Amino acid sequence: MIATLVLKLTETCNLDCTYCYMFNSEDKTYTRVPKYLPLETGLQVLDHIGAYLWRHPGHRIRLVLHGGEPSLWPETSMTPFLEAVAALRNETQRLSLGFQTNLYDYDAGLLSRVAAAGGSIGVSLDGPGAYNDRRRVTKGGNGSYARVAENLRRLEADGLLDAFGGVLSVADPEIPPETYLEWVGTLPKKRVSVLWPIHYNHDAPPQHDYGAWYAELFRLWSAADDPSIDIRIFRDAIKRMLGSAHHGDGVGGDRLNSIVVNTDGQYERHDYLRYFADGAVRTAYNVREHGLETAANDAVIRRCADLRDTLPEECRICEHSEVCGGGFVANRLGGAGVDFSRKSVMCGDHRRFFDAVRSYLG
Ligand code: SF4
Image (cartoon, rainbow, N blue to C red):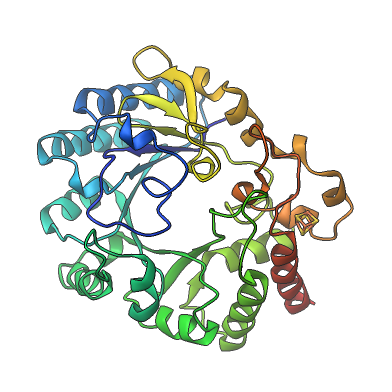
């Protein structure tokens, strides 16, 4: 079953982040598809979502507007599309909306329209300016932090903080954990997701001790005991260890039931495959001819929807199996073909982090 549909409104960006999986990874799909999603294709996607929700009572879908940079989608497409999303949300009551932006450009009108459509605005930032600006750079190589931080303040000043869903960071062990935690405390809403790096797999093993970094950040966060600071992977790990079936992309490892639609209308597998190989994300299906169930039948999407089927043998006897499930999907790839049957190349890092959470819970 599909829980999340990631819709690529654009295949272009106003930044050039060094680790970007859309434009600076193995995958070069962006060179072969349109820069902008045609409005008609976006509306077809909404039709498919509506039909899917009608056929599957009780199911919910999260639609995430993504890119590239989604705010670069022409206003003549964005406005009618958001109106159609709002209508579908009202009609079904089972559709939620996310808008993932770098917030480098600020358009109060656009962000208000996203908020009016019930959307939650996620902002990508990788910690304090001195660290963020080594990776999240403009096409001219300059740092982006000062401008994005100013735009975050404008979001607050414009009364859009309720629609701000939080910050998405990629973990960076070069940031001292205490520095990162202090920085989270300065955000207008202290809510962050800290992602395992997706650019490591069995062909490209990690270069840093991520496990020690996560473990120390967790230790500092739990010692601070400040409920206003919400670090999603910590919340997810605690819930899971306390017996919840709750899962996140970095926790649980049991399913990844999302689907992507690119600007040419092609259904794609999760973005986590973009670092693995050029074209590894592509399926044989497109929105002009196929509905969501057909796309969900793609062999890799089906395997992602139930990763328990490919839980590596050594993970079955691991004490963290329930919460780790073989590790973060992107880090399990490598070799020929899309294969999840090996445990994560970051097993030691996952283990160190989950050890810290388990020892906290006692
Ligand atoms: S910590 Fe390692 S062995 Fe344990 S479930 Fe995760 S990847 Fe498998």
